[in-house]
Image (cartoon, rainbow, N blue to C red; front, side, top):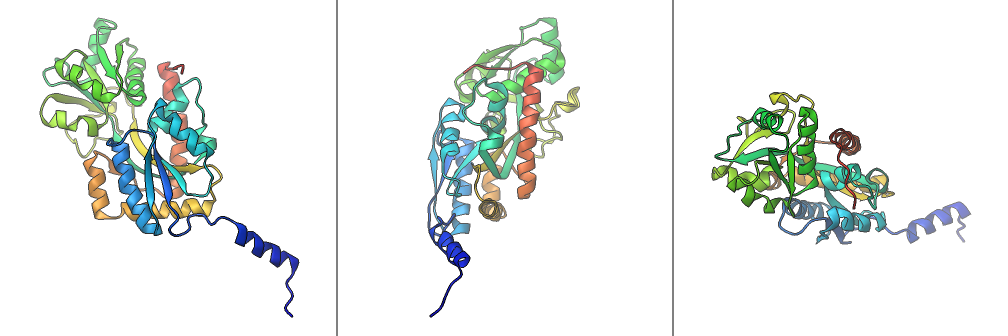
Length: 319
């Protein structure tokens, strides 16, 4: 008769009773904190397919829009940390919300763990095609000559904070006009009822290509290869000005490190595929080359960066 040491039996029972994370054919749910059809949703569906193929499972994308991403983030925070519930977040949901809102129902740095930062995009300063403004200097000079005489539209916190930061760095006072989403700004921008806005290239590219809008600057550190003739804000007199929009995959805090690594590797396998790269380029983004450790360090640094920007721009919103 075989005998087993108690410690061995206990370990075996623990393994048998444990819920296997990322077991084959166990569906994964990926929350998207925005409506279907936008850049985040498009990217989520591309990545979901790749993760599913890499892990031999299905990844179901669930859109949970509203409340600046609070709804989706609250549900992710409460989810079981087994790798089977994820969320694709933007800079705004992960970092900017923490910096500008007085009350946020989650703490990105404590409640979540970063799986990967997959893609990023500069923002662009846009003006009507026939505008008298052709540069950041033109905007600043006009604002100095007539405080609150330059109007900008905002439909997202990312774009509000970029505009307010320019005001702070240039020591000017411009007038912000709030809209319900970026898409709502474009008719007024094209017609000249507002002087400029800051947005992502995906949303504005069709208007740029049809020559309804022109680009005054990109917000990245270096010129963007997709718009090589457009100068950066830094080149135009504000060397500290550098912002990007990025997309990261996150999981609930407490997800086992080996599970996080497995998910990260699945994402990277997808990003190496030619068709995935082409789809990401089509949404006006660039693929980031980051290890798991680099991605986690990056999101942590972005929390600090956007808090510093919000403090410098004196932006605080009640909710």
